[in-house]
Image 1 (cartoon, rainbow, N blue to C red):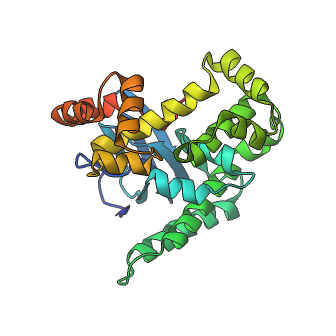
Image 2: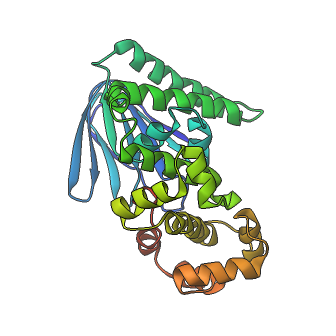
Length: 288
């Protein structure tokens, strides 16, 4: 979804959080002017031309000064994963997309023009009467992410740390995101990373105090929680989507990870207030 806020004669405040649900990741384009991004007592100043990547939270507001236009592009985790792909740039792009980031046009105006053009292309595609192309949307979101990566300086910094343990963990994290539904064995992850099983285990335990298997299971349980609360799928359908042999196997796994059955968890969280629910279900950005 893309929201356009034309410039106005006076200042305006727009809520970014949608109480009815929907994607919680957003890219904000500020072609010119001045704005303030606020959540609670945290305020971040934005001077256009600029682009902002943010994970939207309750009580998240965009305050636009008089004469300041803006566009807000909301996108799902699924669109993000497809836009990032599986290439060499996928790991740093995924890491960047999960941070709050503000980039300006100062480093390279041409790169920023490409980024702004992608917003316009997405808006036109979403307005097509015969429906938008998923492939087109992921391609344009990929342009936005890559140009933000370049404008932020993270591309250059990444070249200097490609072999660090932090970079290896980011690569592992991205592979988990791509393959946790396939229930890869840890040895397969290690092989794909060019590491031994013991080396991957050592890096995870020394850095995160958790085993690789525990991290993979945490991601799987996190996705299960999301689907139980945010989707209308039955428990059997959730189990199948997450790669479990059957609902019994899924229920056993879920009880071990959360201390509750899927049905009880869904009923408990659904009864809670929406703000409380969002506090209960962590973002994947909380994964170490």
